[in-house]
Image (cartoon, rainbow, N blue to C red; front, side, top):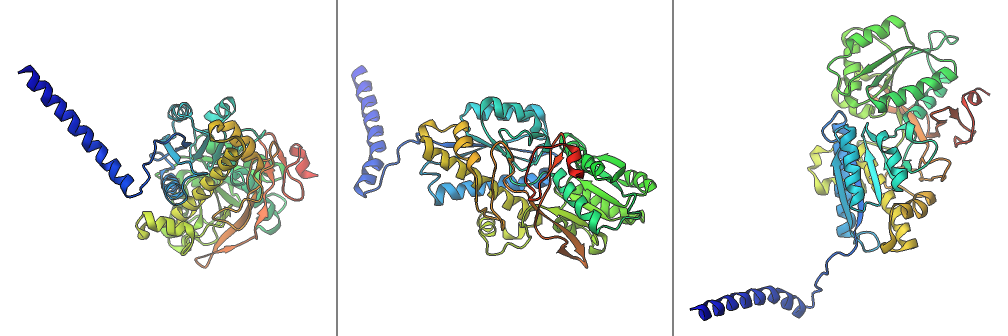
Length: 435
């Protein structure tokens, strides 16, 4: 009886082995290569808020990362023949979750981080340098930019956009009393909004513009009428909005409801294309915006639009998708180009964050982005912005028009504002801007 059971067990094992081997033999007979296990992967860590106040802007970032890396892996064979692994975490504007996600990805061997829309980003600054892993961010947090270390970004900081607008408004603006220029600022709560507010305010004061009111609001405010009434009482010449799409829509709508007319200027996430989709054109008339990319709601026929249509219903494409989706494709493509340079220099076996920084980020020059009409350039140890170009746009007659051509922004440091005639960086302090 025992021998029969042993024979039966042996036969079952034999048949299982035969069934496992047949597909391999068949593939060999057809001349197909049997794929070996993946020995090396390029791991990129993504941290962004998908379920917090900036979720509407972060979701296109997430989708673009998924779609573009899928394209790179399936149609381009990865980077230098190695697949790219997409690691991501919803940080929910929470410092503990952000740091936890960072540490988890670091232990898995991530060689670069891409961060978008997380107010908790400043908490990671010391980790990037300590662990020698670079970060490319879309959050544009000015507190991390100087002195330049392991944090990079594609575009000017919002305070630098504020500075550019002020330079333009002083020459072209409609001040009630040119000798006493006054503005009010409404900004989103948290480290991100505060950093922008502080940098912008310091520049305003440096050039003789008085901030007569400052109001902090939520990322998704239920109402800002009380804040608007306090602003109205101080009689500013302009209202500067720093925040998210809901802040812009709520503010412009409620200004109309309370009968308050004042030129409004939007920074960071307040593109007029988005707002025009939600409000009647007359409520947005005269609205100004600082734009750091050649974004457009109509990218028909471009690679970015085709990538979206291939992976998502074309009808769901909107202006927020157009801007954030295209911006992310730029971010990821530049990151992978830096990784490629590092692999060429040290080999895949020695690939790490330090190599990506040394042979990639610190050598970026003349990189042509997928979206945009200019090149990306980085001056290592001096200026970690890949681009300092921006333009001012306005809504006139229900259409968006350029108020200025593309130009360099001044550079706003945490300890001061410095700018040379070309718009690039030179050492200095707050008084230099007045000379």
